[in-house]
Every structure is written in structure tokens, then in C-alpha cells.
Image (cartoon, rainbow, N blue to C red; front, side, top):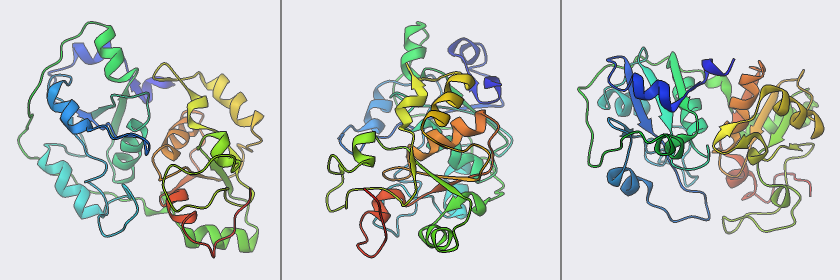
Length: 279
């Protein structure tokens, strides 16, 4: 099952120079970090890996961070990177599976047909003693043909509609338990504390161990323990739409494809005093 989603460092090393393989570093900092991952990528990356900046290939017309870009913005960015919808795109991050799933979701939303995440990320690659390089990377431009799936992107208006009509869609929040339960302030200033009414909490870190997803059995047990009904449609959220994708990918691995990701997440909902919440 996992092979539909991941490649091992050994596999990538063996296929590093395949014509149809494109490698992408999609590292992004947590809200409490001030790490320049682009600079880190310039200093050290897997050979041939390009940097996919989730904060720049984004909707820059909003003050919310790393919101999904317009289809044309994405198309231009990845075409320039030499990526078509038919390439096998291997995504990794330099952290603990924090941002690679968001890039996976973004590519998937716009119609990429073959996407994998490097199990263990850059650390797993380095621990296997495979080579790295430094400096800029470029490929000949390609054409990425968009097949956008807007129905997979949740919005504030949809959530209010779900709450108003008591629909069966379940909300699952990927933030840490202390934030979900309003025991600690949000890392982004000016946001209220709490969560969406009726939401369940599955911290994204619960699904990850040493940069890899836990087994399907373990993840199923975690969702059940947190009271998530896996037979219902699910909308995931988090602080800013980043780790909500960790849950979407985890659910996808479990065969649960009826999901949406609330892109604005708590950065949007928590900033609006008119919106309902629970603590």
C-alpha cells in the first residue's frame, strides 16, 4: 500500500538520473522557526533536486500564509521547473515530514499523476550515505497540463454551511493538543484560542515516527482513539493549512479519499471574532 505514496532512499538512489524522475525539496519552516530552507537547499540537497517554495508558489493576494495558488500560477512555476503532469515527482523535506505532504497535496490537486514522497526525508538519505550536492539546479522547461480539483479545497463559507445544516462532514484538526484545547496561545499573534465546533483532534505528529508514516493499523487505531468516524467525509485543518495535509495523506493511505483540506485553517478562522469556536 505504501509504495503508492513513498519511495525509499535506496530506490531514489537507483533511479536518480531516470528521465521521468523529478526531485523536489519542499521544506518549509514551522511558524515558530526562522529557518531559511531555500538557503539550506542551496547549501545541500539531493543531486538534481529543485526547491519548491510553498510560500512563493502560493496565493500572494491574501495575508494568509502559503495558501493554494491559482492554477495558472502553479502551472507556470512547475513548467519552468521542467515538470509535466506525467513525470514521477519525488518530494522530500528537510524536517520530520512537516511540509512534504502539503506539496504532495498541492501537486495532486492540480493533476500530477505520479507523486511520491521520499521516506525519511533528507535525513534518511544522508543516513544511508548517499551523495548530496550544492548550488542552483535547473531543468529544461516542460508543459504541465492542469486538472484542478477545487472540490478538495475547503473554505470558511463551506464550514459555516456544514455547521448550519448539520451535515455529516467531520472536522479533524492536526494541531498539537494544547493548542486545540486552548491551553496555550497560538504561535501566530492575534489569533483566538480554540477549535472548530465539533472538531476532533489528531495531532499530525501522532501519525509520524522518525520522518515516516506509521503503519496503516497504527494510524487507524489513532483516528479511532481520537473519536474520528472514518466512514464519514472529513475536512482537515491545522494552523495554516500545512499539516492538515499530513492528515489528508494519512487518510488517503487508509483508503479514505472523501477528504477536503480547509486551506485557511486557524490562521483564517482564529482571526475572525464573528466565527464560532469551541474551547
